[in-house]
Length: 117
Image 1 (cartoon, rainbow, N blue to C red):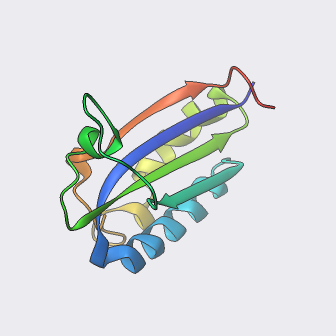
Image 2 (spheres, helix red, strand yellow):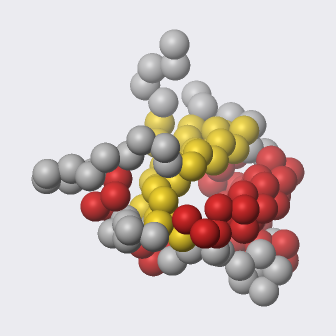
């Protein structure tokens, strides 16, 4: 069964191109280690909520945009084998590919797919 990593982050709006470049470079590494696809989305219509919302979850500031991303894996096993290799890959180290956003405010998780229509 396929497996998904999901991410939400607040990215400085002025850093959109830097984020795109960062994400494209990271996507190459993820795919090299077995990811089927990597999707990065720049927020276009992401409303504030009354109780909770994407902007609230990542403490999005006025000069930031919410980004929503996911990585599709063929299985949890492939994911679990790949992640330690990806995290130690020199191409993704802060000096080589620094995150153009505050990673402490990023939320993420791994998900088992229930419906894929």
